Image (cartoon, rainbow, N blue to C red; front, side, top):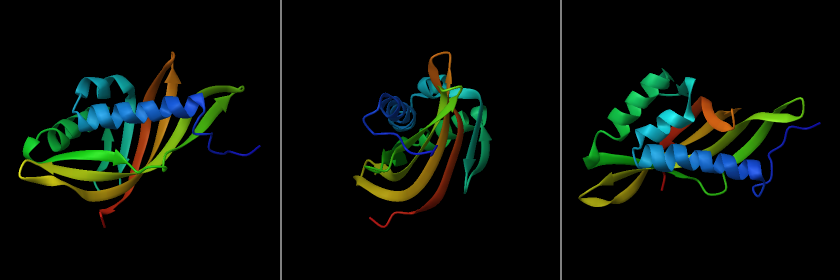
Length: 149
């Protein structure tokens, strides 16, 4: 039995695509810390190839300070179109989680100039289904580099 990506039209893919949007569009881009708190597991581990390792508390503080703390130089994230993949995790033929991976672009927003692409990275995320809710448990953020526009 192979371990392959599921169809982009499957219910699981759509659920995890929504979680990605909640994490980045609502939590990261709109600076909604409450949403970030709700969708992250209490034992979150975030591994970043430049910034090191963070637990949930450190992760939330870093976003509040580094992403949401400077409205003059706000960073936003956009998913690279077509890059999102989802791989189900099952036990006894029941889905208990999913691996998600993709690529994204980062943009700097400044009041004096048009938004411009500043960076690129890949990510892999482990989502666990807990009491009917998806919780982000592990994140690997890697291959960060400057954007080549």
